Length: 357
Image 1 (cartoon, rainbow, N blue to C red):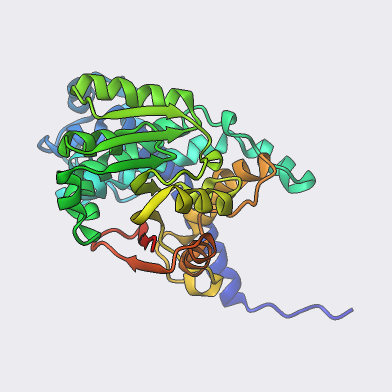
Image 2: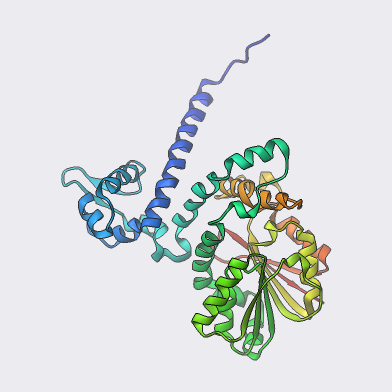
């Protein structure tokens, strides 16, 4: 037997990479804590302060705040002055981890680490025996998605996303029939319904909790032209009744995505538009090597998107299905006019505008 000679430079480099992975994984958990407790938001507005001052301002336990600050300082997220014993969150860092950053708040995403870690045993079991982890094993997932998508909808839906479709805003102002399929907590529907009172909106989602949340928000906002229905969108009856159908980061989760897309196509009136927003990626693995979020997105897919589909005996498409596969499936559903659009500053999504002839 010949012992393979190792390249010690590569050995040491990869060991260093693994140390970074371990540190960054733990930092993600601590970043999630900073987001959830409001520590980042408070520190962004404070002058350099001691752990006692920060704890008092946030009404948190000082001992926990001090240990958290240890991780933040050594992780190069928070600056520390050892002579004064003060901590400072640089504004350049706050721009990516505070609620004031809106869609740029990446701290929201760190919550996935602990959320998905809770189902690791089920994922390992699925590796061995197939199947998947069902949606009900993710009790906080819809809440997290509503938080993440809500800040994006508030910032871009009306002024950026809808204008991607030529003439759509004017049509909405005049009055058309709109469905948001897999609407989650329904925030997008309510924003559109409030902005375009002459149009009629319906949100479909299989989660009764989600549609109840949407209905409650509609009532709070005084929106009268939106309704919500608990419905598996794979069961759309195909009646041509809508002028616009939307989905936001939802097709890749479906057990039967091809059936869903065909149902959407059939449910559009002639000349109707389907706006599908989904994860920006290539269907070819090697083309995702430089994708800034590729490792995270493949991991989230394994721990949620793919597995919840497989748990239902579905296709397990996964969130990295990519633009090529998306265009192919839209074509198979019947769409002959598909455009793939991008929004500047949005590294997460591709915007598919598909029209029914």
